[in-house]
Image 1 (cartoon, protein in one colour):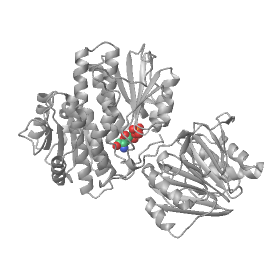
Image 2: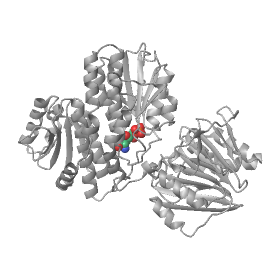
Image 3: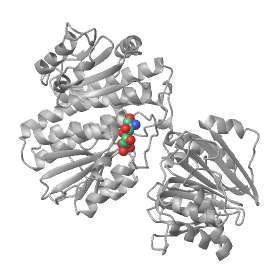
Image 4: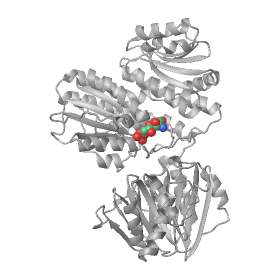
Length: 604
Ligand code: M6R
């Protein structure tokens, strides 16, 4: 969580920081701040709330000429979202920005207070700058003081520190939270927690590894590895495609991303789905040898795609598949055996719980594979094999196109594994491939569908709750539909297996309970129909989504008759996404940046 930017160079530093922070605002937007050192002259600004507030506050501030600068957009972990708690944090003559959590900050804070230091904020971060200045006084060397500071802190961090005492330098360190360094031909140096912040400014990039630290000046960046050895910086070219991160005429990024789904699934299949074969060049010959079970760990939406795939792994690939929420997995002392392929799923590739679950599995000697949308992210780098979802940058906090591509890629991987295991026939695989190729069409948003959902949404702005119900793979889709709605509308919604309603939740049924019933025709139609009838008999308001007209429905969205459950799945997925978005827009919410959430959850 939180976004970090840093800059060393001659350009207008305020603009560079604010532009970078704008790109990172999805990582946290409780407050934001910048600090600039310009020939020993130190300036800082902070503002609570969205970046707009900081932009307004710094309107008259200019920072041209050579200098160093750092900025931060915050998602509060320790301490409320106030100006005092916003970064950068000031010592006597130095500033720090930090992403992550310092786990031993209380003990360090006590020690610093006992030595006479005053704290202004409630954050864990502030200890860093005071420790640094304390060691500076003791050691009389800025870099040694910085080194000693990071030796003392435990936890996850990406840190940038600047000091009036060495006004041409940024000190940096990374452990567990993402940080990269960007370079260009003008000898400028950039830092950021994600590359979108520096696209168009830098042309080469280095992604720091855990435990790395160092210092940067105009013409030189000095890097050390986790053991303190000097390390060469091998940069990679930085992506240039920023256009795809713009809204392109849609009201919200989420809306644009829903519409993009039909195209991004084509990219996901490109070069992988052939006429009678699924190919993953990323998976080396022999990698799956000896694998007899699958364990998937993920969080949120990614967990829902995992859950949907577990039905396919067992039904099609005939392999045992368990799915676990990463934050639960971490502390349950799981029993892991080496015949299990450990799969993680993550849009961002930075989710702390998923990353930690992966590290645990690796320590237990399991082979690992990730399905991820961000190349070079921490989870990708940590995994043996990475299958990228190719969804493009997803900016809306509510995940949509990432979910579509994750689910599609999992379906592809199931088929790949099934044919490697020899449990499906050539004819079956070719038939599945034919259906895979129908997905782009199933994901197309027509004007007719969108305006129907827009009209219908006005009836769903009140009530005492929503139940999304489905069976089989439509149960995880029900969970996902409910998550989408609650994330952006702030209305209470639950996803439930349709057959479970009578074991308790049906007690809630009345006309103010809205049931969104996923009623595919290709899978267990008669079963779900009777579950919905039971709810209707108790006067629940039913919105049925189905190809088959359903006379007890209060509202009905008709889908196309399909011949494969996954095609029905994708069509219904789009409907639930649009419904959530239209309800949230009517309620006046910021769909892209819903309250209390952040795009990338890098704290546990
Ligand atoms: O980046 P990840 O896929 O690992 O993120 C996991 C969840 O935090 C994420 O899916 C979250 O639930 C989204 N806000 C859902 O829309």
